Amino acid sequence: MPTDFFLYSHLATIVPALVSGPFILWRKKGDSLHRWSGRIWASLMIVSSLLSFGVQYNDRLSWLHGLSAVTIVSVGIGVHMARTGRIEQHKRYMRGPLIGMWIAFFFTLHPERMLGKLFGSLF
Image (tube, rainbow, N blue to C red; front, side, top):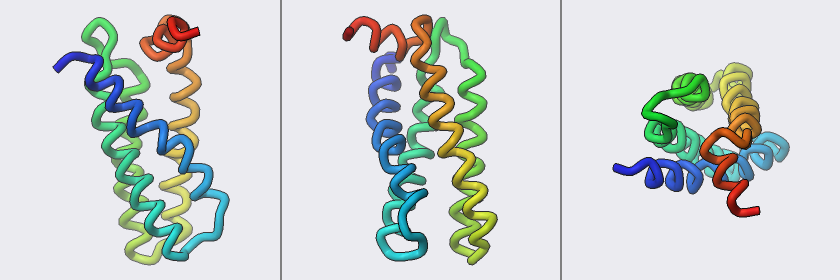
C-alpha cells in the first residue's frame, strides 16, 4: 500500500484524538460521557499508532515510531487499569500518551518531515 494511504489514514485518526484528548482530560471523570469518549479516544490512539508504522520516510522508521509502540502498550494498560478500578494508575497510563501525542505532533511539523512538507505545500 502506498505511504499516502497510511499518512492520510493516520491523520484521519490522530486529529480527532488530538482534539478530544484534552476535552476528556479536563472534564468531569467517571460519568458515561467520560467512559464513552475515553473508549473512542483509546481506539483512535491505538489505530493511529498502528497506522503510523506505514508512514515512513525513505522506507525507515523514526524515533517517533517508538512513541507509537509505547502508546499501544500504555493505552492498553490504561484501559485495563480503568476496568479493574485502579483509577490513579489509569490516569498515569492515559496522560502519557496524550502528552506524547502532542509532543510528536509538534515534531512532525518540522519542514523536513512528511507532514511539515504537506503543510508547507498548502501554505
